[in-house]
Image (cartoon, rainbow, N blue to C red; front, top):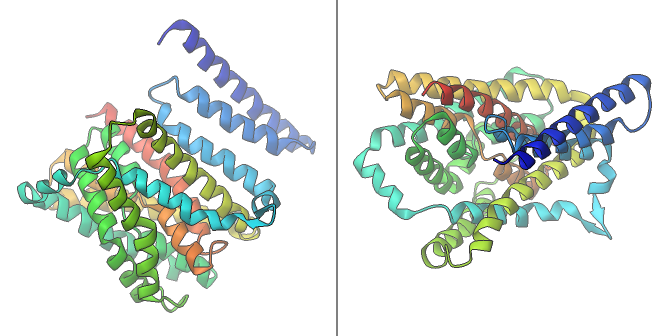
Length: 358
């Protein structure tokens, strides 16, 4: 990196710190503008982090924090635009995200199942056993409203998140294993997620198996198949589109989180800190048991780290989309919105720590 670019990133970091201090001063003094300063702090730090390899992984999370801050302070701005309900954008945005995931899949990678099935099967079974189980235990051990409790279970029953692939790479894990487990858990989601929700959450909210099955097919499977076709026949021919899709996918998730926080504004103000704590416990236990069980099964260190991320990192965007389709975006959908933000922080910290100790 040349000196001029380095100086720009330093200026952005400095400006972000100043904006953060201004937000604290405004909040303490009772002066209006704290929210604006805090948003500016997150955005400036996110841009500044791009110039530092160790901090770069936190940029996406900071953008999510900026969007969440806006949604929490100005929820009315994210309800409708010229009479069009913005929550109707959740499904199309998720379709874009899943299409972006599909174009980076390669069916040839599934041959790895035959060559080395143990870590792949361990990753899939651990994911769909550990996270739903922990989610169920947390939901039933807390006195939360039924729809919020169902949201905790829904996050646990969702497939692996694509962030796990990035974290596996940073941590020195097995990237091929990570991509394969994410892909298979995603393709299994139309059957496994509704089945687990029917078994574990039906007493909290009514679960229609086939309705949820088709929701997931619409949101995940059809776009992923379209992405696979694109990967096979068109990938690399339109480089501008190949570069744009990951950016669109990240922007879509950020906007979905903002819509979710806006819709659940009142709930967040009431039980926000408790919900954050529960989500954090759920996420960290996923890493812990994913890693420990893998080691207990005799799986090597590299693959165990990978499985830890495959278990602990969820497709929170999909969970939000399912909740929105069911009409629970302000309650059930709020949990995955928070989970998505928290998992990016915890995973980045663990991945960078492991990455230094490969």
